[in-house]
Length: 391
Ligand code: PHB
Image (cartoon, rainbow, N blue to C red):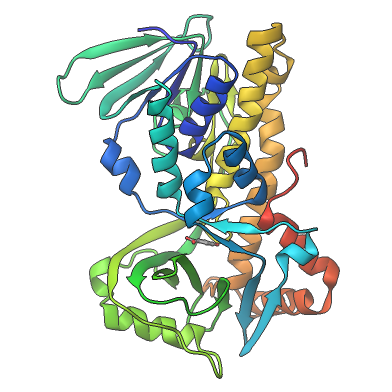
């Protein structure tokens, strides 16, 4: 088997890379260890930055999104019994955010890729990278069903195989930066009507809570929990009691309904100091992780692959590999801004038992500053809707 660009991983980074390469006339093959059903059924965050929506539309991938998504011009922050509406669009010259679940994006991208004749191999395991320091790298993998082993020869490899995938491990002597938070998020999906016209991020003494949405009749909510909690310890009654307590606001009611999905995720910030080695290029979660506060994960992955596929296009079309040589440096500049913003939102909004009472007061001052300073509110809004692409 041979292709120009071998892509490991069929998440947002891998799929979007395949679409962008296809548009540039570059052949690629995606290898994915999970089944298509698993990929399309994994529940993640659901917020798309302004420019990502533009990119999906430009690629002809946004049709269902534009029909089914929800578009928000602002967010609400809540703390110490008060609410603050941040008018994102007004603060950013008209940019808004789009609420559309990540797995819905993936369904659209997979369907369009297959319709274009694109090659995606699901359920292939034992993926290993070879020869990335030379000019003829390859990937070996095994078909889950038949057990047959195959080799994919390629010019370049995109490692878009997530935090636990093999790609990052192939970079020798890398520096890694990490921060693990001493709490997790319990997320639910429920059948209920909308409670509010925009997202509510609540800082509460009992812990953080977030009200978000999926459709007018399906709502997504999160509460901060212990990172070591087991989901069995959280009955529906207990979840609703915490949500009601943390989101409570005079004259406002949180709609409840049957919970049909619940799970707990840990919170982590992580950056791999080098996103390239030889002919291997990392993109998305294989290179960096953000805590979900602010929902930057997919958006950072999209930015990586836009930088990377432009660089590959310059190489294939004009035999210019300057941008490719600088990929990691260029991508990391944006990544670190996403890391900073996700860390800021997380620390400002969560209750952290490891922090001092002094630090807690600083977070409240940070929130109050957003109320009193248009510059501070604008800085949050710019990051939230997505930084300009070349920033
Ligand atoms: C979500 O809708 O899942 C979501 C939205 C905003 C966040 C995190 C998650 O900050």
